[in-house]
Image (cartoon, rainbow, N blue to C red; front, side):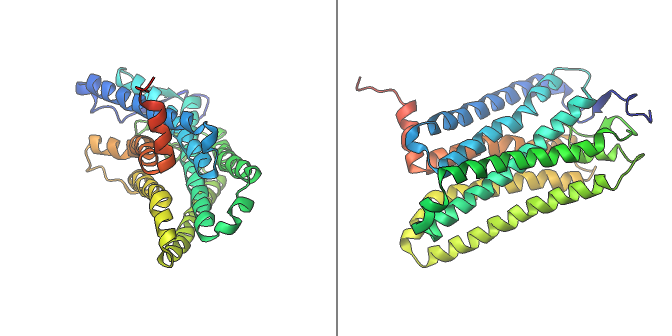
Length: 308
């Protein structure tokens, strides 16, 4: 069992409490996944309208696409496992799932940081907004938000691919890099510590940047009623998205790092998947209902034209 080539499958152990009501869970999960596709694709399709080709909507479109990308790394396998008696995943499949979920979370953080910057320039520096947020820069920023997480996850994952595995037991319902790294204790390396630490620091910097932008946004809104109106209309949805995403992700991070075995398995599973359920569903709804221009386009496309 010491050689990585010997272990070809991992066992996901978080399904033991789901057997008695797995059909119900399967139907609920399938419904949730369908809703995620519906609400996110609706927003993406509507934003393809040329009337909404503005930086804020482009970043929102990418946020919805990223929600579909991240959930695709979890839901199909989870739905299969709910109806299966053997909850196994291949080693390459486990690394791929961990890569997709982690890169999606990191891309979310990058996109939310870009949306914060966009709102900061629009409200705090409106006279230079169009010169600072040109189409070329928006494309560069968006590519950066996608390419950087993928590159960092490729490098981080690459440090573990050639290491020896000391076990095949993943104590969760899906694969994450932290749990995979615990199976590499028989062949530890400095890279397995350095790269994750760099990634955490890099995205913590994004968080600091978001806080910095909101400090100036709130400061600017105190001095202007017009800015307060802009903040309530365009920044409030973003702030709600940030809070929902942060709380959902914090649940999982705290449990993975400091989780207690005294918690029931159902509660553990809920904490593990909350960031894969709530933000992908709620975020498009928040923006669709709150942003006036987007809400009008949703109404225009979704409601039947009785006048015809």
